[in-house]
Amino acid sequence: MNNGRKFAGGACVALGFGLVVLLANGTLAPPGLDAAATPAGALLALLPVVLVALVLFLAGLWLLRGGRGDRR
Image (cartoon, rainbow, N blue to C red; front, top):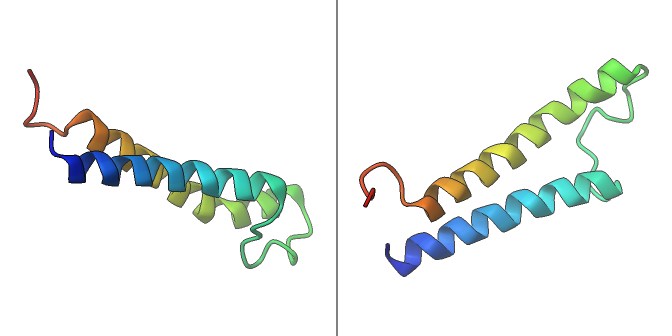
């Protein structure tokens, strides 16, 4: 596996984890969260940001693992 792929995978994992930490601390608030009057509305406002963090994390794991063609 080449070093660029390892670096990109590690960066994606770190960014995904960092985004979740920022959301948990309340440092990063998505737009529409202040206007949400119900808990369900707050969850719906957080959904896009959490999905982006999850996709970044999973893409990083895929890059670190080696993708489909590199099974030995």
